[in-house]
Figure 1 (cartoon, rainbow, N blue to C red):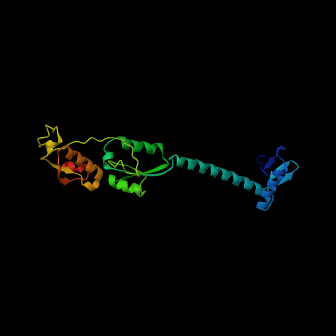
Figure 2 (tube, rainbow, N blue to C red):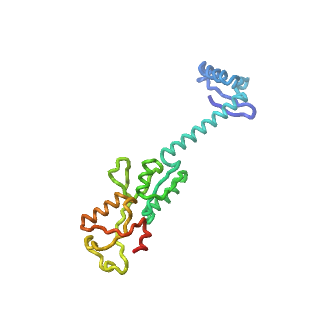
Figure 3 (cartoon, rainbow, N blue to C red):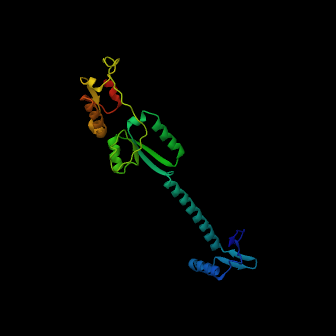
Length: 225
């Protein structure tokens, strides 16, 4: 059935190969459902009534809406539309890889509302478990955690920062145990327990028992050195 539109009523050209009783029955069922005629049969052919034209217009709108919904849902399943909430540790903002990646993501997927929330690694893990965030950039996590999957993005070397007046400023120690008599500024354990334990344990295995005299939360601790 090919439907075309005229200035008054829409003529309908019926292919005789399909003009079978079944088609007539479907038309009658439609007219019974809507409570009135949808077609007018004239000497020059079959035309849509005003009600038929409204039905045709509405059907086309519904098809367009269905197509738009399908397109949008498929885009959502591909991650191209929606909202994304990510946590990030301050440390990741020091480099260029992650900030650049976030910037490029925003340009590549403009229909995704990206929200970045500053959090410590411990806070991010709790937020992930509570489903308050979708992912996060952690400085350290427990690789054996059963509910989390991680992807290494970058490595961050550890450096020893000392005052300019320190004897180690010009002659760095060759062994950790050489620092046995030095006071240290270090993060509180509650900030990142796995990371804290890993570093302290590594030092202990090397013969260095850290004497921590000052807690520090971030890079601002450099002013204390």
